[in-house]
Length: 325
Image 1 (cartoon, rainbow, N blue to C red):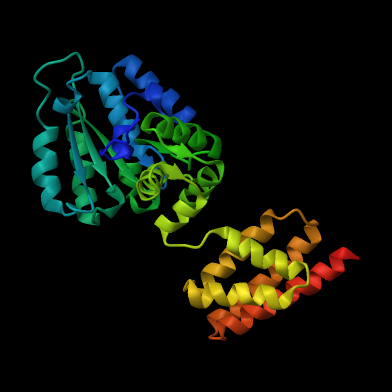
Image 2: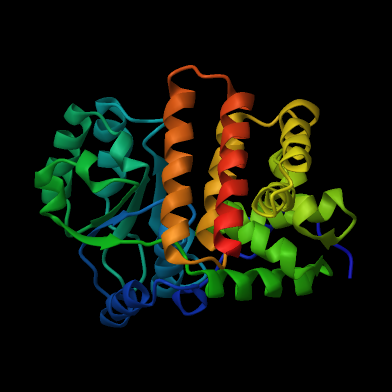
């Protein structure tokens, strides 16, 4: 099967609440709103790419049917964050009832609502009060703290969490299968690690890597797209250090710093992640994490990166000897 040229994140966006991945408790409550043909003002908060905008669009489609676009207005508050937008576009849309349909109200979707200025939020609060009969508001943002309390008190608040890895894996495998992409296990793991629960980022990574490597996605393809080195090289360096092969480990370190141009902070972050995953006694994870923290502090104070990371490798070599006893 040939890969399509469309953006996969949009192509495979769930079309109904039934198709939503994860967020089961939230989806269950939203389905009840659809069944009752009624809903309160909504406030969706959570990190990027976890289904906030998808959820309200799916709800609207389930509520209004195929012509749902006639009953909604989408605005992005980061582009139109001032009070004039609220007084003009929002008020004009909110005060007019839908021309036809079983549902007596429309839905205004305000994405990145936490970017609205304070005066705009106060104006919005008043409009939400006045035009409740003809319009419901769905405000979407990353942080509820940036939304004024009077608006929060008028909304049902839904907190979206990053997607679980199993749900992400299932969805990514499904997309890869439909697009004729060979998604290797190490590639899938790399996507999940890089996206950290952000499904949109995960799908975009899959599409970009598939294009780069001709439909085969492994961890090398993913880290190539990200402009980062595969953790395999860092893992190799750590293992050499733990085996006491300090000179060889230092050569890998120099290659990462000089040949591949990695920042010392990025290497240190990857070392820490690998140490946490390693199958070693808990006590040594604590000791080595403390050593990483010490190097991290020294780097912030302006110490030379190569010397500090070499010192960390020396500690790994000493730790490896003690663990082998």
